[in-house]
Every structure is written in structure tokens, then in C-alpha cells.
Length: 173
Image 1 (cartoon, rainbow, N blue to C red):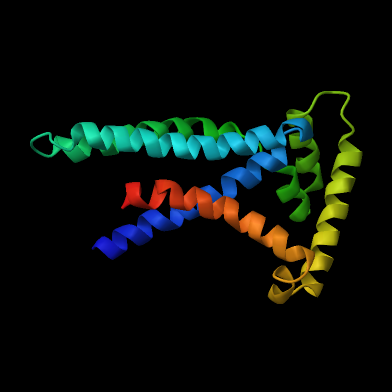
Image 2 (tube, helix red, strand yellow):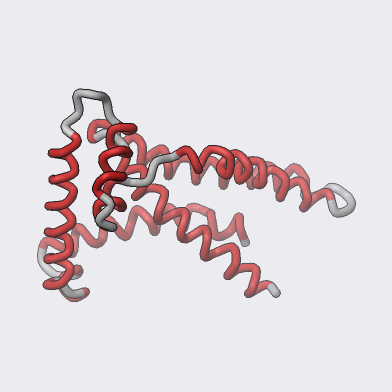
């Protein structure tokens, strides 16, 4: 049962931790990308700290309320997310990759002001996706750890590694 619980908790958590910064980086204006993706990681750490405080305050409560309160606090955030997430636009990068250019234009107009060059932006996304596809077809895992790419790989891996070792596994466990 413990293993099943870990799998049911770990998979969605891994998906959320991976997809949230990517989505935010794709929809945020260029000038705010760093701040927005940092805010995503900050909110994850804030949630860990909140969970620890609630757990610490309720661990000596008699009866089942000690664990029910912890679940109730986390479901408040999940409830808020379920209410507001349907109003978030799909990422233009995702839509262009799917070939849904009209929907990508609509969502890009929602995300940027009237004077924004939507056609140019979507053309740059399309070019970027083509370059990524070509690079992925030519690349290998060995290249990730050789030459200049070794430092890039270590930096990218360390950001997620540090996020994980700072306590999320312990609090969820």
C-alpha cells in the first residue's frame, strides 16, 4: 500500500514539477521569464514549508484530525487550481507543435498586447521547433556529457536536483 501511495503521489508530482516551469517559460513575456520560472520553484518550496508547519502543528493532535488537517490544507490549493486552470490559455509552442496555428494565434493575442507581432512570433516558434527536431534527430545522450554540453547538462540537472533534495521527498514521504 505504501509503494502504491508513493507511485500515485510521485508521478503527478513529477509531472507538475516538470511541466509548470516549462509552461510558464513558454507563456511569460521574455523580460519576465526568469522571474516567472523562479516564482514557480519558490511556490514549490513555499508549499513544502507550509506542509511542514501544518504537520508540525498537528502531529500531536489526538484522533484522525492530525492527518485530515494536513490533507485539507493541500486540497484548498488543489481546489483553487481546479477553478482557475481552465481559464489559462494553451501554450503557443504546444499549439504550433500540434499544427493548430489558428488557435496559437488566438492564444498569443490573449497573452500579448495589440501591437505584438503575432505572425513573427509564431514563425520564430515554428523555426525553433524545426531546429529542435533536427537537433534531437542528430543528438545522442553521449553528447550531453561531452565538451561544452557537459556544463549545460550539469546546470540543467542541478536545478531540478536541488529542488528535489531540499525536502519535497521527505515532506511527501
